[in-house]
Length: 291
Image (cartoon, rainbow, N blue to C red; front, side, top):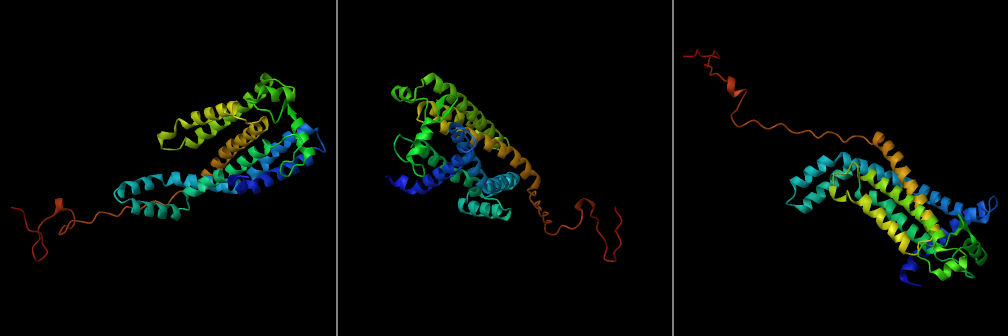
């Protein structure tokens, strides 16, 4: 076992145990293939529901950062020659408004090992072996599970000999894998466009097009099974809906930052009143007549 697998081993067991629990529940009501499909769907629902609180915190923090954007820009301009002070002042301003850059990254940091865990578990179904929380009988059941006639463990780049063992051809696999990829890529594109709609950084405007395209190519060239693609699709749909609904709610609830009062400029030394209206007075207080 590699060091990477040793670190993620608890994640593998947790993901497989959760997926096994959902499969055991649904197998009492539907056929085995549908039970496995529903197990993957509700695995996504369970994990994303657990991450809902940090996801909302991420959206709140992002909304706050957008609202204090002009102040952050002013700080960077004012302290451009002093990076240490700029970082200190920026952090202080973010703390004062309850915003955090790290908080916007937390859901992604948590989801990454979960996705890797699911990928590892779904790719670990092999005939006659156990797969973490799954015994050999459940492994055999998963290998027999199909969606639209295509095994959940099949993938677009699978060798022809393995496809023959499943009794399916590559065209049938592509007929299922490509729509899943395109739908998932479309959801990713829409989510990224919405995320960048309020961004002032133009350098990322190409990302909503590049990232889904790379994901589609990876899904066609790498061993990403139909089960993994199904997980990716459901997860991306959830992300899109969560971002739309959550952003609308957060924008209504996040208070606007307090206005920054600009101190009035101090008068020049010796200047009193309006110099354009100044007239000399005598010591008695009467205005001297003009000559």
